[in-house]
Each structure stands twice: as structure tokens, then as C-alpha cells.
Amino acid sequence: MARVKEKKRLLDRTHFIAAFGWGNSFPNTPATPASPRRRPISRRASPAFTLIEIMLALAIFSLLAGAVFFSVQAVGNASAILGTEQLRARKTDAFLSWCRKGFHNLSARSEIALQTRDSGAAGLAVELVIHRAPGAFSLGEFDAGGTEIVLGAIPDGRGAATVSVARFPGNLTEREQRRYLEETEWIPLLEGVKNLSWTFWNPAEKKFLEEWPEGQGLPEMIHLKMVLDSGEIVEAVFRPPTLQKQTETAQPNDTPSPSPVPVPPIPR
Image: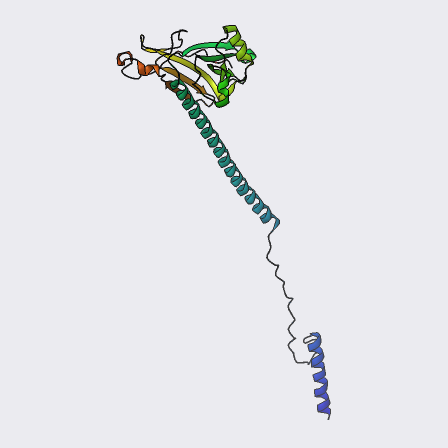
């Protein structure tokens, strides 16, 4: 009985020591391994971007967006410039075709004269006056203005000129003509012309001259030279119908290389 009580006492002490983890604090007590402690469960942080990573991503995105924007803007500007150049080329071709048709429709009685006219603060206007040209240089309702026609480079006050056309009656004096041209409405044909010169073929000297005597009819060839505001140089040679009525001996064998002395440039 005493042995049973001793075993029970030892068993109770063993359970007490194991519960509180005191090990071999009591003498004569067999060592009992302590129960393993629970380790704290470490919680791993959820994956996310840091502030530096977000700022770096925003900087890269800004650079890419800026590069795309400037690329699109450059393409747009290039398209606009190309469209402007194409429109200018079409207007120039249309003006030259209109002039070629107008000179071709001149009659044998037509005459030309070159003059300059003071257009005020803008500067001098270089004008080619064509007398007795009722059916030439047609512009629809504009043809009712008279039988005389003027092709003029009218300064626009910005360093360039606008090639325009006007008609006036044939029974005006020189003074009345100048007053009429100052008051009449000009029809613009080609804008942005920096310089314009007319020269006329002289068969005797076999070269183009910058003057043509009034009353001498029509020259064999009329040379037009224009310098546009883009820097492009446009040249054309027009042949009035009187050239077809002349003998072949009066015509130059080869088309001459025009080197005219230009009319004084339009003041800027």
C-alpha cells in the first residue's frame, strides 16, 4: 500500500514538473523532458511595390509618353508642311497654265507694256499691261471689266507680293488708268511672291531684254521669273501666237538660256 502511494506521489510530481517546465529542480526526481514550446508563426509580408518603384515606373512612363507625343507632333507638322507645299505647287501650276492659255489667245493686234506703279507705303507694283486683249485671260464674270488687262505683283506690306489681275476700259488716259487701277478690285492669283520679273525676247540681239518698247506689238517669247517666299525659283517662257506667223529664219535655232536682268525687286 505504501509503495502504491509513493508511485502516485512521484507520478503527480512528474506531471507538475512537466507542466511548469522546472526540469530537475527537485532532487531525487528523474529528469523528464520538457514539452516543446510552440514557435511563433512568422507572417510573410504580402507582395507590393515600394514608393521608389512606383516613382521609377512613373518616370519611365512619362518619358515614353513624351517620346510618343513628340513623334506624333513631328509627323503632324511634317504632314502640314507637305500639304502646304503641295497646295502651293498646285496654285503655281494653275497660274502658269492660266498665263500660257491667256498669251496663246492674244490677237495679232494685242500689245504689251511693262510699267511700275507706286502702291503707297507697301512699295512699287510691277505690272504687265496688255492692250486689246478682250478674249484672253478669261476669268468668267471678271471679263466684263474692259478690254485691257494688267498682271501685277502687288506688295502685301510683309516683304512679299501677290500676283493679281485687273481689267480696265481701253479708252482711258494714262492718268485715268493709274487712278482706275488704284481704285479697282484686283483678283489675287498667287500669293507669297518675293520677286517677279518679266523679260522679252529680242530677235535682233538674240537675248531677253527687261524692257519692251510700247507700240511694238508682241514679242516672240515672254519670260517670267518668280522667287517665292519659300526660296523656290519658278521660271516659264510663253509664246504668243504671233510666233507661229513668223518665218523660221526669224526664230532662234535653239531655245535660249534666259539670263535676264531682273526688274528692281519688290521693296520689303
